[in-house]
Length: 240
Image 1 (cartoon, rainbow, N blue to C red):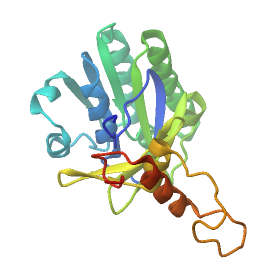
Image 2: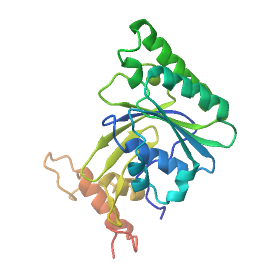
Image 3: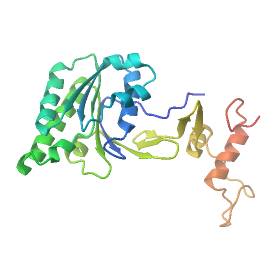
Image 4: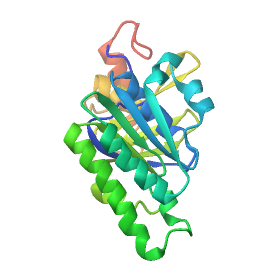
């Protein structure tokens, strides 16, 4: 059986993460999962002090992996824009990842004239998008779910949404859906995981709860029947 994955690995191109909040560690998890899958250097253009050393070391599987991560911090929109252009100069065929959390945040500050805000932000996002396309670099931008993403949404190749659950972060987007959660040394699975693995049981009259009288079991009952019918030895939830 394929090893379950609770955090997706990014494809080349521009990905916009709509995260639960500006300091969410969802972006750290996505970045570290992708960094583990690449061999190149990663650039992190930080805004609002998201690149917490504590968070990165707490989440990474091996501290040595962080040696390939280059972090530059911006405190104004102008610094952020300049750092974006600097990354373009430094990136090459060995660059494995680019991360820019809270990509729109600094451009909404009072020190940026209103007539410049969207134009400057659009220029920065276009720079990241062009680099992602030209070098085929997985590029991750984030904007909190409750904020206007502005041009980041327009230039993104894909959008991944993330929400906090009792078990951890749940990611959802094109080709992405969290169906398992890693918890204290074991996998916590979900009904969609088993449906994807084993398929739904065919409809059989008389099986399952059917309060509406349609003859079809509900999704939970379907997944349970499918797992029992498959008889997969050694798989949690399968028949013995």
